Image 1 (cartoon, rainbow, N blue to C red):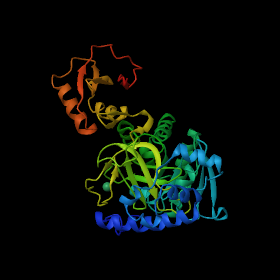
Image 2: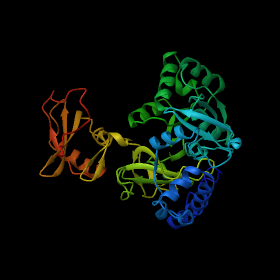
Image 3: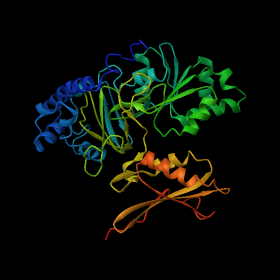
Amino acid sequence: MNADRFFDPRTETFSAEERAAYQGGWLAKLVAHAHANAPAIRRALDGTGVDPAEVTSLEALERVPITRKDELLDLQRAAPPFGGFLGIPTDRLTRAFMSPGPLFDPQGPEPDYWRFAPALHAAGFRRGDVMLNACGYTMTPLGLMFDEAARSMRCVVLPSGVGNTELQVQMARSFGATAYCGTPSFLKIILDKAVETGLNPRADLSLRRAFVAGEMLPESLRAEIEALGTTVHQGYGTADLGCLGYECRESTGMHVPEEAIVEIVDPTTGQNVPSGQPGEVVATVNRTTYPLLRFGTGDLSALDISPCPCGRTSPRLVRIMGRVGDAVKVRGMFLHPRQVGAVVARFPEIERHQVVVTRVEHRDRMTVRFETAAAPPPDLADRLAEALREVVHLRAEVELAPPGTIPEDAKPLVDEREWD
Ligand SMILES: [Zn+2]
């Protein structure tokens, strides 16, 4: 096991009971602090009759009302800048930001305020790494989120920001940058630019590891980048909450840090969904500066609680499947078109597909129509149906469509149900 201080064997290998006790401990202090210092939290708890002294466990946390991003926006507009959620005096802040939305985000005095150092560490970043930080530094906290994390690990940061691809290549080469932080698509653009200017990224650049966030990471893109010599790990977080998950060397989902309690809830009822099922990511992080209790991110994911060979025992967010608004409920389960897209991508024979949700005799029916270029193998439909059932936990009718019947710009999911 790695003894480096950014892998903490005291917490990252907790048993379920130890984790519950550890998180219950900080949760109790956080809720008491928020109730005493953040007027918006006090109003929310008092208004729903929740005694802060009783919120000491994940089960009790479920009674605290969820604050969704849209509501935060309204509350911030009514009481600028932070809507009554700030838990410390304003003069103790170090920076403040305006994220798209526009949402205001504070930065408190804590070192590595957004807690991304363990994420960079899990991605292989170490002291002395020279990190090209291709994230914006203006208005939003993005660039500084990773800047602060890298500096706390004593990495050297090249704050290169977004754009200027050719200069980024020059900078990476001149400083011998060993690591990259930013979106995966922009990393690919930088590596492609290097190739275009006659360089061989493997030999002429030293970019060996990357931590990517901020957009979807298709496995195909990961493979293309890794073929150019840079290992890619992804993480997940929000400007409001900081880090909520990161991949370890196994890259089989994003471990939830011990300082975050992540729940997966049914967006319509706010109740936790059974383990493994998809729903909205709702998170509470251990941070007194801006104690957003049960913040509804609007992102869809699911938690995997199976053991991970890396040694960390925390649950993993499987991946971000999209935004809540794009999902539909089928037989009581959330279904996002991207979940189906990820399954279909495993079958290279399939050229196009479309999910159609209908209702027959008051029962939802999900049909996945697909087209292939050549005559498909006879068992393709069965294998696709089986893979869908395993991943989306729903039985689907699978239908081979005649060539040319699914338009190129077809919506990935069509909901044809009528409810009158
Ligand atoms: Zn792991």
